[in-house]
Length: 145
Image (cartoon, rainbow, N blue to C red; front, side, top):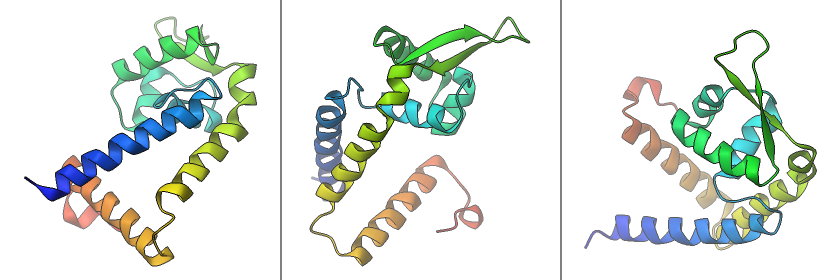
């Protein structure tokens, strides 16, 4: 059995479960927090713009936005200049949970990496960035740290 894939899959599953539990206290599901993060940076993006910023497909954002709209976290509005487009806007509730969700993410990172030294944390982040870039097919010259 491949140890790397086994450990990575197990760590990913445990992190996802812990994140869902901690953010769920604030009415936010895993995945939704990343959409919220993009909209906290710039409200009123189209689903395609959000998808580009968080590196997922537009249909993924559309499906997530539907669930978020039902949960009262965002609303869709037509683009005032292009009737073919819809824009996603945060609700008051989504803005109100920002601090709590960001705190939950920080606390989860601290808990997950509590037994790592600062150097190990930096190495882990660097290694994960390299893995992502490699699997995305980013040429070596464009990879950076």
